[in-house]
Length: 396
Ligand SMILES: C[S@@+](CC[C@H](N)C(=O)[O-])C[C@H]1O[C@@H](n2cnc3c(N)ncnc32)[C@H](O)[C@@H]1O
Image 1 (cartoon, rainbow, N blue to C red):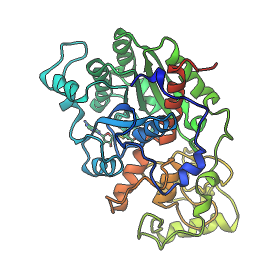
Image 2: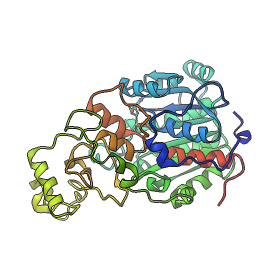
Image 3: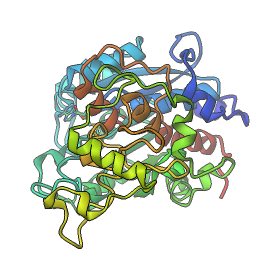
């Protein structure tokens, strides 16, 4: 695809309508010119979905040349939502096996041959080792080296744009993975920018800070997109920040009995249900220290948002894999005496209703897939800016 020839108009879908949409747009119908994408550490496909929608808005299809994840359930959900994609359940290192800067391995030549020309390389390498929530192993975790597989993939595939998502603490990695990746990608003649973005600036109804590395072929474009993302400029034509109500208000009164399905909350323990009642009876959002388990009581503590109740008129706190339990974050529904359902968590992560998690029925898997996903709107906003910029329409 020549991105400079795409029929760009001012057509930006009404994001909220898209979020509630039950039928899937015709993304990968194979009949239109398509954006060719490779998604590594693809999970259930949050990043690809953002790319697909950005492409759709400018009249392009999406052609997923390769999506790789080693979790079978993630690959299955991806495949169910992108039936034309080449989805591989395996290790990214099998497809990109060579050392940075070295000649391509046989496996890499084959990966390149099968992928063909690639417009966008996207990926969210595993981040547990860097996560601030993980104090034991962070920063020296060998999994952080997987970040560099993205740089290697850029060398192998030479896409027009590279987007890598991670947790903010990735910049403190002992192996300097971000610096190394930047150096390597710059050597390939890309303009590279990196920094942390509050995703509420990208249309996500959450205070979720994430690190992005963006590399483009157009000089200055990556820097311009990243600064637009950080300042909120990419969203200036919309009401922002978006709130919890914006994402889930229409689902009020819809929840099923606890523990049953995608529209049901987790089962609260007796102690936690009492805490939820305590919050509602006082109409407050933060639990008193006296109501917390003893290990959370010492002051000052960093657990303020844990056991919290969401605010209807504010973005949610970061949605994690623990959204089904009030002891793992601020996950109590703002209006109903329960935690949020997988469906509400998916909405707050900006997965539209047409995106199906139905190939999976285990609540633990939904929690992992939804909580680990890169919110589609994050990639959508960045990809919109990239497509606009590649057409010479980026504004400062
Ligand atoms: C942060 S999640 C990615 C989320 C995904 N980008 C999305 O938007 O839904 C990281 C993913 O990397 C996968 N993963 C971790 N190590 C891997 C490896 N060596 N090869 C392939 N997948 C891996 C995990 O199964 C997980 O789904």
